[in-house]
Image (tube, rainbow, N blue to C red; front, side):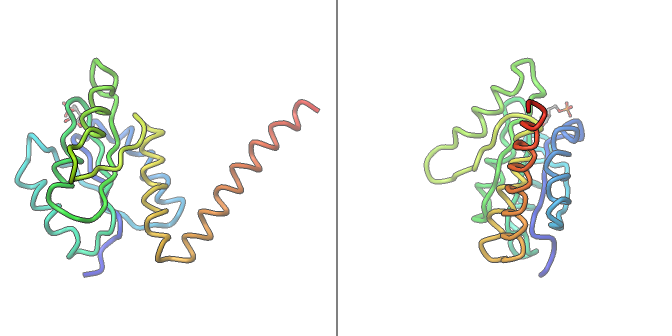
Length: 163
Ligand code: RP5
C-alpha cells in the first residue's frame, strides 16, 4: 500500500509540543506523514500491531518520541525492520536524561537511532528521516542540499552585523 512514508508516534498528547518540531520539518520538506499517540506501557498491543503492519502500509521510517523510562521506540523497533528514530522527551523530573538513556541504550541486535533530547532532537529526527528517504529520492536530496546551504547563508549573514 502507498501510505505516507513517515510515521510520527508519541507516548502522550503532552509530547506534542516537542514532537511538533518533527512535524514542522517534515512539512518544510513536503514529506507526507501520519501522527499517532501510542504508549508502550498504556497500549502495548496497539504499539506492536502498528509496527508489524507499518511496512505493508508503505511506511519507510518511524519517528517515536517518549518521556520518562521511554520504551516506545524500542518496542516499535522490536516489531519491525524499518528504521526507528527515537526522540527522548524532557517531560520527567530528570528532564529527559532518563528518556535519553532508555532510548539510546538498546541492547545489541535491535537498534534505535537516537537523537538529542527535546524539540531540537525532534527536528533532527525529521531531518534524519528525510535523509533516509533521500537515498531513493533525488528531489529530497536536492532539498537537503539547499537546506544546508540556507543554514550556512544565514550564519554568514549574521557576521555582516559586525562589519
Ligand atoms: C510518557 O510519559 C509520555 O511519552 C510522556 O512524555 C510522559 C507523560 O505522559 P502523560 O502523563 O502526560 O500522558 O509515557
